Image (tube, rainbow, N blue to C red; front, side, top):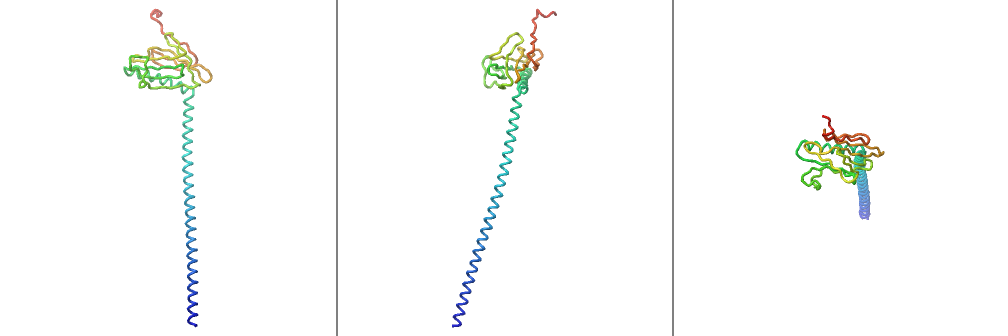
Length: 217
């Protein structure tokens, strides 16, 4: 009996030890799972913060680029910038013609409030080919074309006015009158004798070339 009681005691103790070991393993496993979940949560949290920082940096760059682009557009739309671009286009035509045997034409479109520079490649001067166009710009409301007067007396305040340049210089001189945002007039004067393109305040008087009979010498 004593031996059987001892065996039962040992068996109970072994079962108790197994239960304790199992409970310890379960607790250990749960602790490991909790640690892993905490680590994963921390890792995910850190990754999200990194993404957020990257997104903020990218958005900041986009805002900066948009501001620069807007500032460039505002500068381009000012009266001085637009009229200077027109003068540069006419100077380009005169310089390119002087350095070659090609002919160029600056077309002032008063009706559409714009201008165009093209290289003349055909004998038909009324036909404008798409491949001939070098510059094609529109003017904004704060830089408005009013009229064009040539130095031979011709005048137009509608339609097209053409300044043609060849190797010898401008075929005709004249002036292009524009208004700024305050309705103040300015004149772009084309001098066919010296090929100079000048901007002058006001609607200036145009010096018309004299005929041979009017020259005293």
